[in-house]
Image (cartoon, rainbow, N blue to C red; front, side):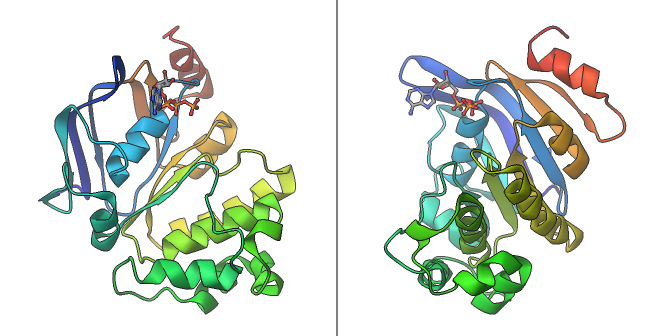
Length: 233
Ligand code: ATP
């Protein structure tokens, strides 16, 4: 049984259909990179898995449980955590307070503030700093740390590199790599194709709400993905 089974998913924003009859299975421990042009429906898909959008049709089954209509906060308790685009931290609260607050929403598990600070060493000296005063990279690390504090079984990341310096992006991905090495299941949206193809076990390319290409790393080329990206495939 796959960890996550998305079947025939339709998601609408009013009259606009952002996800169309989309099916995707995610195996435990897998890292999936979702790529595609602006407006392809990637964010909508991630948010639907996390429960922030309700689909018009189809189903989302997680660990054998049909979560299609379960509200977002209960999905967190089942092990589904989203790191949203734009991070959305509590800016007046410290890094530590942001992390601690998340714990009560999640499952029981091994993640602690100390472990997050180990996983993101650049946060260590910023532990008591207000989240609103952090650099972009530190904020992103805090946002990922907050999701980890819920002890997720699947970690969903929307455009973690957006607006970060190249050095900050490298740091975030170095930390993600060690999570991947530790067996965490990850679904991420990444605009940088090269990076996506380096980090993921499988690349899934969306266009106009559908999956137009998917393949394991090493089994599809950058050229194939680029063509699918723009609907030339
Ligand atoms: P981006 O990289 O720009 O975030 P994306 O692939 O993540 O793109 P979505 O953000 O999922 O795509 O958007 C898919 C389509 O749905 C787009 O046409 C977008 O304008 C539309 N859309 C997204 N969110 C909403 C919303 N809340 N209300 C109305 N339309 C929306």
